[in-house]
Image (cartoon, rainbow, N blue to C red; front, side):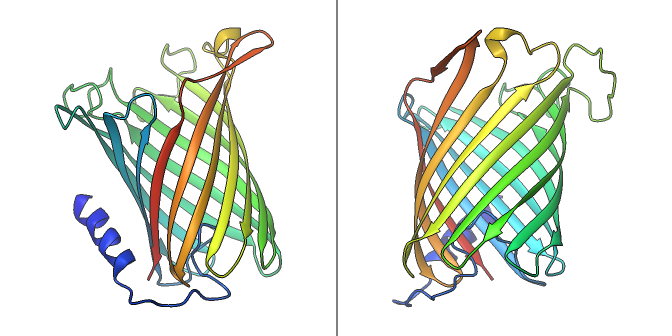
Length: 263
């Protein structure tokens, strides 16, 4: 993974004053999908204003099997206190299939499988009590114009401490609904902005009032290096439902940078 991430970063900066194209292939648009036989790499580095001694480096690497079907792999590593503590956070596979895509309207079916927090608690590899296995099925769609995009998404997530444990009475079983929205604006050939909001609701034994749901909010600004490369910065904020009718924002905010390339 580190080699993939390093390759992505080097590729982003391997340009010599190229001018940005009027129609970018990859510029942070939330409904982007690589063309057939194209790869996409998005590398991100992020931290939080309340814990700047911690940082996470992540990589998403995808491939367009056809113009309508892509697969991807995502993973990340974290460090704290100058690498006194490190963790390997997740390995996740996903697939997206474009059911509608010839015109301005887009509709994708999505699916994913992930293994989360494999070393976050410094236990044995794939330790049953510290690892969550997550299955995801969903749909995303929206309207794409030359200079703006609006997108909505719905994901159903099942997580448990065993990969194929479908027992709903299991203490650690989690059924989660994710509803999200994104807005994208291409301000010029060089600059684009994106905002997003994602709501997460745990449907079973964790759905008591003080943990009824949470919102993840994000806003970012991208600089389009050319038609297939961009670099961006973003901030995030989490808001949690702490009691009936009461929401509280987490202290501080997240911030990060992202580098993307289509090749």
